[in-house]
Length: 198
Image (cartoon, rainbow, N blue to C red; front, side):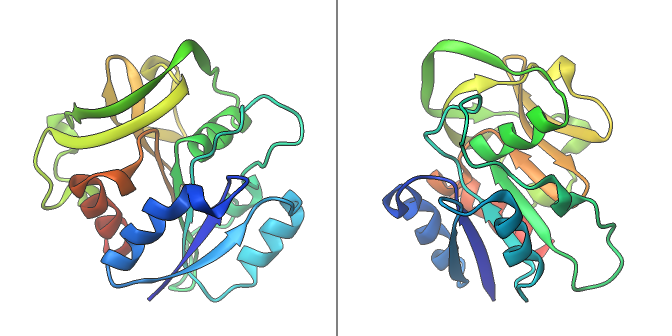
């Protein structure tokens, strides 16, 4: 199976862990660099690709700076109608890009939060296919300065897990949004596998 990787960084070296995780799952990554593509070019490339599963990476860019890569929101306008529909996994910066465009207020810390932590999935969401075979709490890894308070998210976004009041995993139409970096931990790689095959 091929998985599209949209590199939201300036350099491909920053997606090394993500590429390794995809290969570990037995999938072949196809890399699409968001820079210097325009949002329209990025959208058209994905829409015309036969690849169904697309992962948008994190990024070192500041979400509010001009000229930074953004997730094309038109990707989410098509309802699931057949087996050729696209599915998306938005990691960290890419999650922020989606939620900011949806109008949710984002918060900024003075410093980045970096490193592993245990993320508890609420009982009502533990049976979700994304968490199949994953211990609870799951071990995840983060590196982000921006975050969304869990209380600001509402329909059509569905929150699945939060940590210290911050939204960590959510769904939006045909996309899964994660504030952590699933490619960095064993539980996270299982999460990616569940996303691919669920």
